[in-house]
Amino acid sequence: MKQIKVKHAKGQYKILIGTDLLPKTGVFLKSLVGGRKILIVSHRTIAKYHSGTVKHSLEKAGFEVHSYLLPYGGERDKSEQVLKSLWKKMADIGLDRSSALLALGGGVVGDLAGFAAATYMRGISVVQVPTTLLAQVDSAIGGKTGMDLYQVKNIVGAFHQPRMVICDMNTLKTLPLAEFRNAFAEVIKYGVIWDAKLFDLLEKKTAAFFTSLNRGKLNQKDFSFLEIIVYRSAKVKAEVVCKDEFETSGLRMILNYGHTFGHAFESVSNYRISHGEAVAVGMMLAGELALREGLFPKSGQARQVKLLRESGLLEPWFRGRYAAAKLVSFMKKDKKAKAGALRLVLPRTIGRVEVRSDFSGAKVLSFLKDVLTNKTGTGVNAQ
Image (tube, rainbow, N blue to C red; front, side):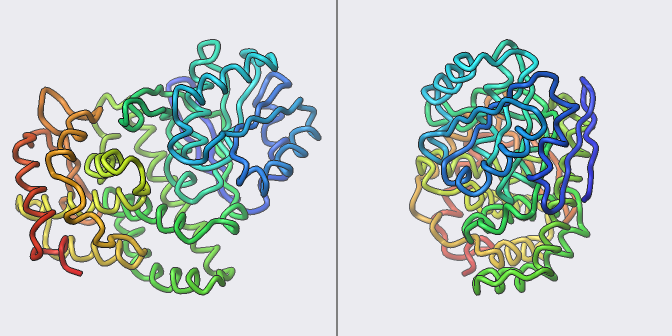
């Protein structure tokens, strides 16, 4: 088992990464959670595979365990209606400030459970147990919680650090192919923004990994590869979060590489486009904009696009389907926009990016109109 320590303003927590960790959940939490009541927040599909193991472990450790299942599955669960239902459940079973929520599932489960924990009685403990690769490398780490409002993703939220993050590689055995693809967009992101050696590793291993995945035959080497990329990705995010927990210095914003464009695609499609697909296109567009601005070499953009495509991302769905003006209108609602200007994270080389605040909506609109309609170009439109 690998461990990463994440320091924050109120203390620190551990990220645990390994196999066969769910049966030890109660042991891990016995000294962390002061109260005896824990509410497992999950979704029925996930609960079917993993809730019983976690519940048994917690009860064996002396906890009184309750369960709440999100009704829909997907982004629809991050709504005011579902949040109120979850708050009611927490109050009905008598959770107090010594109790805890345990988020068992993917990013949506973690986001909503984290926000409910942050706001109930002005804050109770939350433990993140991510069961998707995407949540293990991204959303479960760093303390960001949120819900959607008026079709804008994560516009309501709070910083609320977990007491622990438990990443059990065994939960990935039931993950469908599409979810692996989703996650690889974020993993590749870490290579572009911070860890060039991770990017090199992905270039060597990704094509073979997805060949195994397409055959439905992941072997021990594949799972070892997954454990390595979860560890390296989590380590990058932890390091950035430790240096800029509340987004005051601007460093943490680099984690949003690809997300300003990506969230706009998610919103304009009413979330029919998955997060990973949207972020992949967002990264590609950010790379293309940086290339046109003379910030990013053509070779860097070519490497990024090739790796995204090897992960099964960047299908040509984005061109011609969505109006550039509509996309820019959602980008202007982004939390990172400031004084009418869009703040974008753009790559300089593999392993380093910079935050730019000098792009007007009009300039980005012109860029998107060209990219989304033009059948030629460097990397973006090459099929």
